[in-house]
Amino acid sequence: MNMYSDIIGALGEEWTVASAGGITGEAYVATTRQQKIFVKRNSSPFLAILSAEGIVPKLLWTKRMFNGDVLSAQQFIEGRELSPADMKRADVAAQLGKIHHSKELLFMLQQLNHTPVTSSLLLRQCAAYEQDEADVTIDEAIRWLSVHQPIDDERELVVCHSDLNHNNWIEDETGLLYLTDWDDAIIADRAFDLAMVVYSYVDEVDWETWFSHYGIRFTSELHYRMHWYAIAQTVLTLYGEQNGIARAEGLTVLRELLDEAEERTQ
Image (cartoon, rainbow, N blue to C red; front, side, top):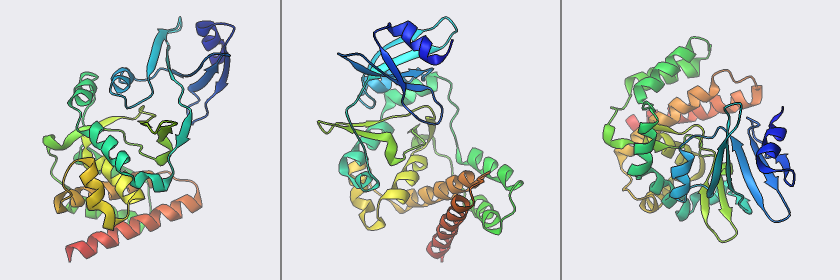
């Protein structure tokens, strides 16, 4: 029995099911004349508290199938994905700040036995990947990461989404903002997430204002940590990249990050 049949069996014959797209093929949109819902297979148990906090669309129900899979149904949001320009907005910063400052989210992920993703772990991953890569820029990046590794501070550990692409942010018709696709959530230094957003979408002249909406003061120490994580993430993104254009673009970004780091230490 395929996934479509499983969902129809769980919902009823009056429902129509279509793929919601995505890489995993685990997400579907189910509709009747009266209702439209988002259905996903084997979502994290973390989804319930995210729904309760208003961070993701409302969780309607979960149901365990005969084969052990768990279906979860959420309210379907009639809205739009944010554009890259939207990521500079105050409400994006505030929503991410709410997530990072939530003790409830952190406690729940700890209860699910998530081991923190520390700078030491990322450095080991980067060094392991380097063995399969033959590129002077990547070699230089690993050396820089080793010399400038930040001290892991438990006080900075938060729940990180870890894939803060603008496409994962949804704004509904009333202006409410949701952050979706939490399958890769981790516990890590807040700089892990912040590096993704700030370096990708926010002009540096606007960083101080953006962080005031996020909820903390932007400091040189935080800037240092974000830069370290930005370089580490870029190295890991390059590993195994087969698309020549994407690889070249990634190496260009890495080179720019290393040059900026060099300028800041002079």
